[in-house]
Image (cartoon, rainbow, N blue to C red):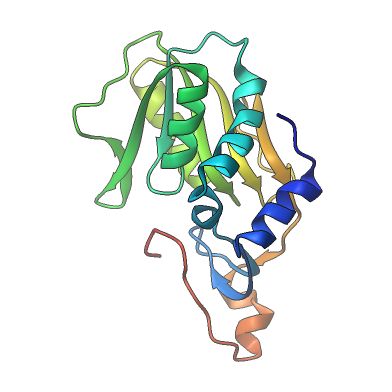
Length: 192
């Protein structure tokens, strides 16, 4: 199923997942917009529709495993893996670094698709790329729901997002919202 960017943004609006205010992003940067993908992904129908865009992009690629960074990418990775009928694992934080735990492994030569919910700077995805490469496995591509960078983050592999937006974000010491004294919120999953 193919959705237009407007239809995708309508889903975010309908589910109150597009937040406006002053936010500290997982990257540490500040923004006046926040995409709370979890509010969209609580609805199986929307999850299926959005993840089908990613699955359709990679359905003809040779893939053994789908991996996602916890927590944001968990549902996206699981659903894309389900649609592609591939094994699914995830990386999670231990001492502030993403790592494979719970007995998850990757083998040399294993072909891996990385999935995520929102990309601003791509930090978590780059960490997962490093994990995959450190195990001798091969990154096949990257799929994610929201690209806040409007395509400026390039992972060096085939990649797709369901929606691309150029959402301004600021280093904390350059943030106009901070200078105005507007209270900041941190709705994401990682403490920064």
